[in-house]
Each structure stands twice: as C-alpha cells, then as structure tokens.
Length: 210
Image 1 (cartoon, rainbow, N blue to C red):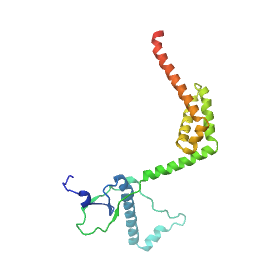
Image 2: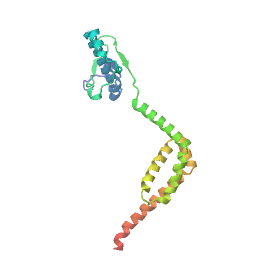
Image 3: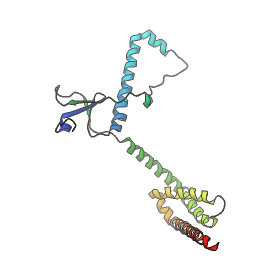
Image 4: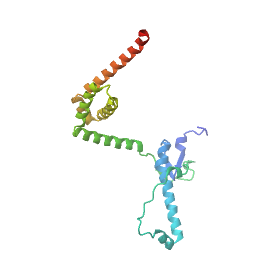
C-alpha cells in the first residue's frame, strides 16, 4: 500500500532462504521453520567445503580421535543466527520462478499443546486407575473439619490443584463426580464464604464495639 501498487499480493513474491514464502504466513513461523534451517544448512555446507579444501590428509588428521565418537552437528543458539534476510520482487520479471514455494507451515505451538494434552490424559488415566481420585476426595472431605489448623491451607491448595487437573480430563472427571468430589468442593466453597462474611461483619462491628 505504501507503494500504491494494486493487487500487490498477486504480483509480489517474498523470498526467505531461497524459497518463495506465502505472504500470509506468520513471521515467527517463517523464521523458525525456514530461515533457521536455511542458515544451519548453509553453515554445514560451508564447513564441508572448507574441509575439502584443506585436503583429505588434514581432514583425516582432524578426525583422528579414537577415544571420542563423532558428534552430530548441533543447531547454533538463536543469538548466533543472523537477522532474517527477506527479498521482495515482482513475480515473473525474470521468467517463471524456480524456487520452491512454501504455502503452509506446521504450527509448532499447536503440536506442543496437543502432545502436552495427550500426556496429561495419560497421567490422569493412570492416577484414576491407582485410586488417586478416591484419595483426593477423601482428603477433601477431611480437610473441611481440619480448616484452621496449622498447614491446612497449604494441603487444601494442593488438593484443589489436583482436583482441578482431574476435572480437566474426561477419564477422571466422572470419577470425581461419582465419588462425591463436587460435594466436597461445594462444602469448602460454602465454608470459605461463611468465613469471609464473618470477617467482613467483624470488621464492620469493630468500630461500634470500641
């Protein structure tokens, strides 16, 4: 729009790492999945060329180390990756483009979230199978009468976190309901409301009593 070019999406091409990138792809994903692998591959290629230029004898001498195994090349840290170079050009000026086109990229965040959700489901399933849900409900019911004792709030906080995790998974949510977990949670809620109301009442009556 700054160049007053109509239909810029159709006539412009964006190149990153010798590949034509779709203009609607997120920049962060292009950087992580296109630019970083391109830089790593380029460095490996240059290193191989340098080793070849030194000659077979020098390369063999560099590799003579019987006590240590060869380590696969590792990706350099992000602070060693140069800024992403982006080239804009008019499509078709030099003929048909020969570079590969990238129209879609995998959403790494979604994949990580899916893997984490699957792992959470497995942990909850195992937790329910070994009687963990029943133990949590039992401790929640006992914690109602133990409120006010030293350390009771810390224990209750842990129990509520576990109950919340159980409620997020279908495999343990139904067990939590069937074993009376909702009833125990409501009892704690009502007890908390009563304590808050009593505290507010005491604060308001305090000046009157003095």
